[in-house]
Amino acid sequence: MFIDRARIHVVSGNGGNGMSSWRREKFVPKGGPSGGDGGRGGDVILIVDANTNTLIDFRFKRKFVASNGVGGQTKNMHGHNAEPTYIKVPAGTLVKDAESGEVLADLTKVGQKAVMVKGGRGGRGNARFVNSVNRAPTFSENGAPGEERMLQLELKLLADIGLVGYPSVGKSSIISRVSAAKPDIAAYHFTTLTPVLGVVSLDEGHSFVIADIPGLIEGAHEGVGLGHDFLRHIERTKIIIHVLDVSGLEGRDPIDDYNKINTELRLYNERLANRPQIIVANKMDLVESQENLPRVVEYMEKLGFQVYPVSAATGEGLPQLMKVASEMLKQYVEEPEETDDTIVYEAKPEVEFTVSHDIDGAYLVRGRGIERLVAMTNFDNEEGVRRFQQIFRQRGIEEVLKERGIKEGDTVRIGEMEFEFRL
Image (cartoon, rainbow, N blue to C red; front, side, top):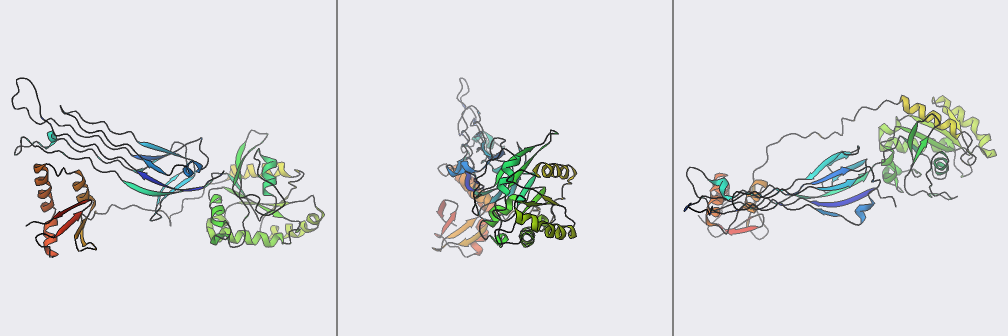
């Protein structure tokens, strides 16, 4: 089964907790703090694997959770960092944030990696908080929580040449003749429901990958039929072989078919309409094709195209067609990257926190930094609580809450922590 779209949930590991401990050595009656740091949580990383061709594995597993870092130990021993969790994807995978639609990565080369969520850093042990004022800190930090996000994976085939055309024009028959691919072939529309890849090997030792793109129909650029699912697989192809049924036995005119398909390509992506094309007149073993061919040739020559007559049924003309395609690939020049849709990341100052009212009237403080501080504070330790209160005031949160009218005893929520405000 060919699966070319998947939605997965990735969660990085939490950092390990720091340790609060004291040296216990013979002849050292007042040993200092010796708590080690916790290890970093595991990242979740996508990696392009040469042996993965579709996204079918994500039908059975859709949530990936990395390991947590190991907690710090006594005697200043730090916890181990967690190993990253690798998720194998095929070359040609486009990764988007499922909620915003933002493109996060475009993975096209084997071995290419992309970190999707980073593990939380390990909490610091009490030995790290020693200073000239506090020589014996009793508190340590909890590990920072990991991140999580929903990802939308979309596979765009990496083929050199794409076969396009209306249903039943003979694309599947052509690819079965010129490669070892075995697509379903029958005398009804939409026999091919998924793209089929084949490798064409020529006598000269040259080879290339050809893709049978399922039949397009009018309105495909708007998603009619399975339009979007099919069209995106053409985007990475270098050359398009446009297959026409010149017999007209399906009740369609081959010239009209050609114009409609190119309109769909242009409306979906203007660059596709400008991609090099080879025009193929198929079903030349039929009498009707012989009669219609001169009209098609005349029309295409006016557009600057040479028409290649072939018969997928008998194989006639296909070797020459593949040689022409191979020569065009050798002369192909990569198109410059698009700039209009390129995402440019700019460093912007992070908003430290926001204060709003929750639905029950409680004061809701949000901000990555303050929420992480809450998660990493051990509120069972009195000295740790005092440190939290000090940072709470230093960051100006208490001042903003007072400006918003907070009163003694009002509820304040930060992350998963809820407490009463005291002046």
